[in-house]
Amino acid sequence: MITPENILLLFGLGLVSGFINVMAGGGSTLLLPALIFMGMDAPLANGTNRVGILLQNLSAIVSFRKEKYSKFKISLKMALFTLPGAITGAFFAINMSNETFKIILSIAMIGVVISMLLPRKKIEIIEDAENQSNFKIFTAMFIIGFYGGFMQVGVGFLLMAALYNILKLRLDFVNMHKVFIVFFFTIPSLLIFAFSGNVNWPLGLAMAAGTSTGAWISAKLAVKKGEKAIKIVMIVAILIMAVRMLGIV
Image 1 (tube, helix red, strand yellow):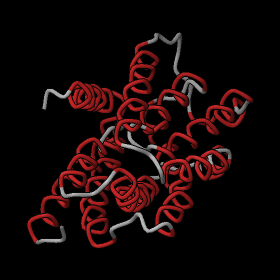
Image 2 (spheres, rainbow, N blue to C red; image 1 turned 180 degrees about the horizontal axis):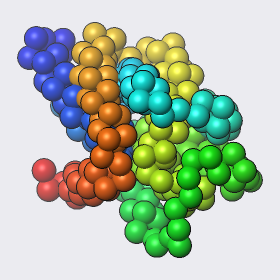
Image 3 (cartoon, rainbow, N blue to C red; image 1 turned 180 degrees about the vertical axis):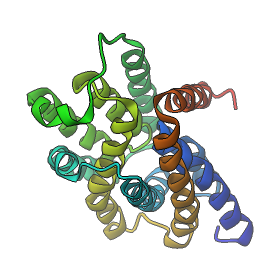
Image 4 (cartoon, rainbow, N blue to C red; image 1 turned 120 degrees about the horizontal axis):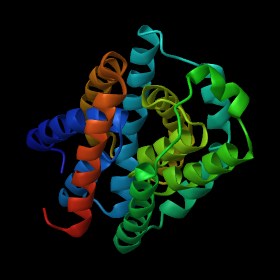
């Protein structure tokens, strides 16, 4: 399983996945099938994937920070509500079957795609997010935390849908909060997978080298190109995910 070819493959896929995950989401649909193809069962693949997710989002946070895009106080406030769900979800995921993985992923993605297509009357700026904190967003964070701890795949879409539709934020600010929130709740979920023996560290770190690089580039592009570029990448990511779910490739 741990061969030079596999390490190079995961680094390359990680590079693309990290870029897609920061811009939109669904990048793990490239990595998880590769891990399973290498002989991992669903829990081991699910846990190993989170090594790349953790470092990818840390890289994106630093990149956003260097571009002067950060509101850690607001991000942390929302991230805290994901923790109970993420911890619970990770414990469930340890015994997750491949079939359950596919069913939940399909249902979640249909809902996310529909929510992203719903029209909005206007876009607010990031400074308004503090005053918009409400029961809806905190409930959404708990549910998303559970899904992220349990499945992870596509959680970026769910976060974007929640922040975009509930707080009415611009997509570049949505991504800024998203990477912080995912980083935060990935810490306890990764620890749970690790302590249960469901992380392959060498392959996970090979992936992380790629995802971190892709995330760094993606965060800079999100700031420079803004919402238009994010929407383009989001559409591509959704199409890739839909194709994989249908088993076309």
